[in-house]
Length: 193
Image (tube, rainbow, N blue to C red; front, side, top):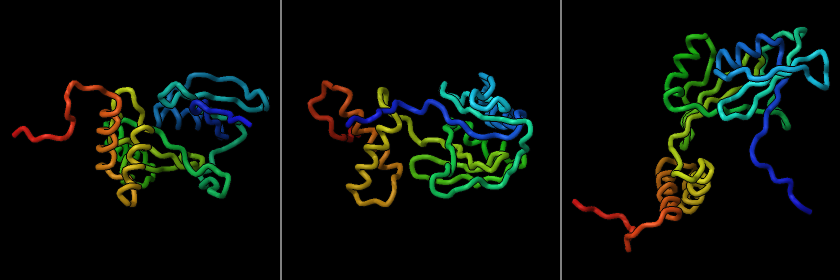
């Protein structure tokens, strides 16, 4: 038996209401360019809209002009999607509360997640959206996941409850030490003052 190895998210497809609600939210609020449009090839009465969330992957929406927006919270039962999180730069994140407030969109305010900060709000159809901003940049040649994996091991080894900034900084130092050579015979911390 062999695995079916994934290599990233290809796209996420959501069931939307009418076309304009989707365009106004995904492009008009979240800034995702509307890049492709065709009929839903499985249901001729629906359109299939494609948006770029910023990494060249896709968020797609099935729309139907007979469906109207319903902001009732979507199901959080087993098997349902709880929320979708999108990465935003620190400078955008710092403007998020003000920009959501300007539109009258209710939100959670800033939430401290230890390794990132988050803000949650619902789209016009009741799906919870998270704007997430990492507190760190991974070393060159590494990913955020690499840093989180090492920070997790450090956190568990120390018996800490959740990942904190110290774990991240130590993980970054460890990754740099492992991946970048040096001419120094001793890489230990020093105080030259």
